[in-house]
Image 1 (cartoon, rainbow, N blue to C red):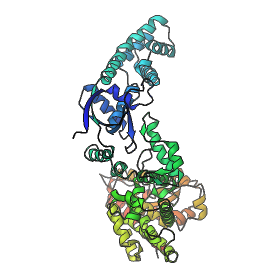
Image 2 (cartoon, one colour):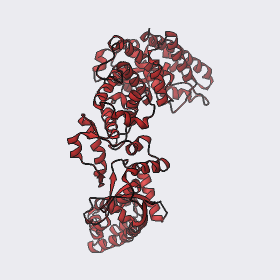
Image 3 (spheres, rainbow, N blue to C red):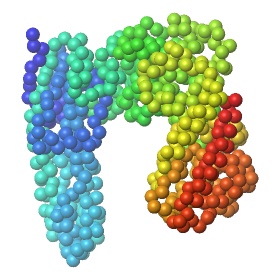
Image 4 (cartoon, rainbow, N blue to C red):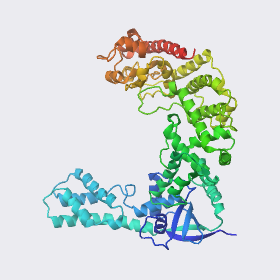
Length: 610
């Protein structure tokens, strides 16, 4: 039995059906709504422009799949949201910046000559173009454009001595062909035919159809597919901020003129019911705002899925057995209590690693040093140690006794794993392994700390540069934070003072010396050449070393003791007048300097973990 028919619509038909704010649409016209399981708008401006260009060229672009709703002239979009929404945007805003961003040079020349017949300079063309584009952007649609008004605006914007009527006519005549050409393109695109596959079968099959289409077409990520394939059975959610994040997701589409089928913000607030997907979606947004340590993804749009909430919850209660079935596990639990318990674990981990992860640098925002799966692993391990999944009422009996020990071990492994690059690869399976094997309870010996630091340092010695110097990596930041946390006072941490990571043998000084030698490269950016310096001192001295700079805001003895761990003789070699004959001497001097300073760095680092 066939559940579909094929209809032919125009692009204008599609756009009018998508845009529920189109006042020209009558009650009997077709309407397309977005089902609540659909993803948001994912196409970037470049891809949207390419789609419009394909329409203009008459290229085929495939059919759209709509599901007919029983008894009314309404359809749900199953496949084609990106194409349909792009068509809608173009039809109702064809003069937007992404559709028209320049004016033909001959048009600008003709207008310039009309205004200033004797002026051959084309510098004024840019200002004329800005006037034309600004007018188009304001009007948005061709039927709102009046070329006579535009000609008046241009004439009034450029004081001149030409006859108003004659000049105005010349300006209008210059713009008319340009305008007509784009209007013709617009009309042709609007009249383009689109094959529409109309599904009229059982509604319960729509999620499966959506899943299969998007598994084989332009890919959704797994978490977007869960929106369609997971159970839509409602769950009572107490956290109103989570609910508001879900509402903002749907409003992000509604504000663009699209109707979300079955969405009612007032009802959602009143009943406080969400699907499992909606709960985790809102939770991800809520946690992103609440916990700095979870800012490992830059997905800040209202309809972006922050995957980390799905993965944290799965790692805590499902141990990544099959995240595709997580909705069924959630249905059996008190999700409000679960949320609070996981948040306790996140807070505990955040506090445990804060001495290193939140150490004050020159960042105005939280500087995330860890990877997504490393922080998930720490949180899920903590949750499992803190609670029995079958009893979320109270913590495990031995938690209070061992909590301080676990906090110290988490910090140690946090630092060690960043230095070693443990989490550069490995995902959910690795998280499960670390939790199951309770790896975070293992001790790290002083010898292993030394080996970790040595391996990092000696690897950096192979990374040589003479220009385009690399920035400090996360491992460098962690090592420095461990060293300076014992030196910085509470006053340092709480003050408005910022601190820079600086090269003691400064990059500019080293670059200038390296220019004396033929393609010589050295490990300028290794940990042994790095230190923290107060921002005002570092930026005030510019390319000079701390010993060459004058008017420092701190005595040099304080800088040596608290920041550089050097004496003046350590950096005297950088002041020598090297020539092309001195390469061996220069290399030897630098290598001695970093070897000596590395021994100081290493000793101070190991002090933290004795």
